[in-house]
Image (cartoon, one colour):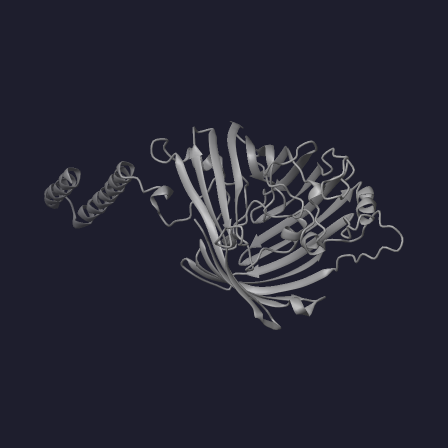
Length: 458
């Protein structure tokens, strides 16, 4: 206030003196110049106030979009329009050590679903709640974890589940190169790393990235990520793999997701046979992303004895390969994307032959595959609120054919599920969304359904 008063007084004094020696036009010009100087001084004072009184951090409960340290992927804008290109390294370096070493984040979703021709099937559930927390030890080293609770209640009699979705330490080796060690999500497709309900269209996650890519797919191991100024991002790592001895006799479970039926999720994971992954993404063109990934891992886990259930163990060298390609184009109000994935089981013929002769009638397929194409359009936006209708077509087959089937054995291959999903997302805020959609199964109209839900992330 002292500086403001002095400046105003000086302006008045100079104006009075100038009135005797200068014209009215000259006095007016000097007054305009002084007003501009006063405005600049006010801006400087406001900047000093902000430095002395910084805004509260995310841990203080500010309801503004806050980057989380779950994944260091450079990602395209989310469906809500919120820019999601961020990294754990960037997040940790933006805050002062004494004020924000701890970071809280998470997401949740509640869904309702009803089969079109079966009113009694109507179901509502608190699908999942994820509580995330991170800690920054230094500018270069940090920790992050996600604890997931599914279907609200967990007990021996309930269908709920509690699991760590991620639990890892990440370290910046140098600018543009980082490493993570622990239980983490693999950089496969779009949804596996970025699966908050505000960041994808539809009440439920798409079929391809749940049935073929078993999102959320996590393994224990070590991974490296490199990011270049050109927009190229690469990932590579060594992790645990799958265990074919977990293959159930329930064909419904395996046809829902072959890899999902034998994943280990870091729970005393057998690690005699490891997995290796690599991924490339290019984000150098504004609004564009394209890339792909490849995973190769052992599933036999070097086992060659008879299981306690009487079923034969797989070939010690049995393995799986999963490859996928993806692309996204966001231009104007349009959001267009496509993804294709295919998996192969290797050396499972002996397992199928041995188990089928032992009364086990759910063989392992040698191929499973799927693809989708999706288009969304931001129809309306006002402030934080927006309306985004979308449509998606998917083609999925989780059991294309079977090796090692003996003559006369009758086993049905998986159907080519062809599904249209059409709906809309209404964003109350970039971090809060209301969803509604209709799903139409072209090959089985009994599966047609109506879905609605609410999702959020923080």
